[in-house]
Image 1 (cartoon, rainbow, N blue to C red):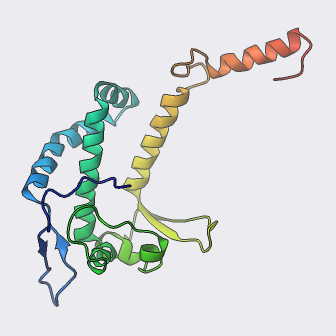
Image 2: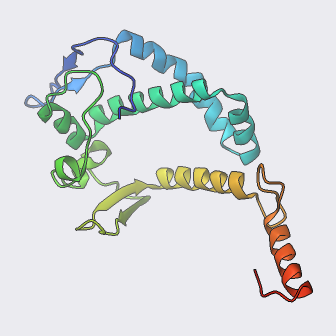
Amino acid sequence: MNTLPAADSAPRRLVRERIGHARPPIPLASFAERVRFTALVPFNFILRLACVRFETFLALFERLTPASIDWAGRWRARAAFYRAARRVPAYRHFLRSSGYRGGSPPETDKENYIKRYRTERRCDGGRIPERDVTIDESSGSTGSPYNWVRTGRERHQSHIFISYFARYCYGAGPDRYRRGTGLSVRGIRVARAGRGRGHGRGPA
């Protein structure tokens, strides 16, 4: 399933880096795509401000339509694709070796990407950051475990969105109501405990 918008023109123009010898070609965004990326600038700014607090984050997304969220998500992903093609050596080489000439990019997996390129080549700039970095390791449930390099900024953003999701689903504390249920977590526990003691039943 393709998650990125289709190309606006094909074949897409390609440019070669001129530092040293010829490097893998870098895909360039079309004019129409650059216009869309420009339209994302105010959205990204507002999103950054809204994410400072859960209340503002929720207020923003309650006012956005599903279509607008889908549009922004797809074009933010497209912008991330071009950024990775420019700045991540492994991904740039992967696109060239895959014969990419525009449209939706080829899918990566463990066999054609993770096992093929060293960890540092899969990092921004082709090297592991010297500071503020965490190297996570997968469980290895499908075979050999793999390392995943994450900066402090990425970990912070992940923490923020996970905490917002948990708060949205379950509330900020034991007395907060679950959205759409009208029942609090503590209220359910008290009712069950009371029913067990009052009616001679075991704990629920």
